Amino acid sequence: MTSERAVHTPFEVSDGLREMGQAIRAARLRRRQPASDLASRVGVSLPTLRKLENGDPTVSWGVFARAVWVLGLFPAVRDAVSPENDRLAAAIETGRLPSRARRPREVNLDDL
Image (tube, rainbow, N blue to C red; front, top):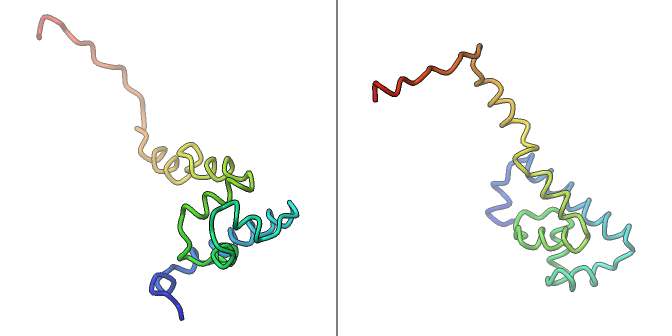
């Protein structure tokens, strides 16, 4: 049975979750770590780890964070979402730049 949250998940999100789950699985396999060991280290059941690796949107953010931390991938995830790497926000800010620069007005202290 499909959960209500999974039904309303946009395609791009569900596709991205699947890709991230596959990346977590690949990282686990490259480290030659059995699924049961990773599940134990993350603090979840084996079925929950399988859901994470399959991109199930009902798996909590905390489980994802602990899994990437255990695998040593947490710094890359933090970097990916840092404000410095937000290209859309940078483009919006660039679009709002003034067309020319003006000198600041001098403040006359006698007028205060």
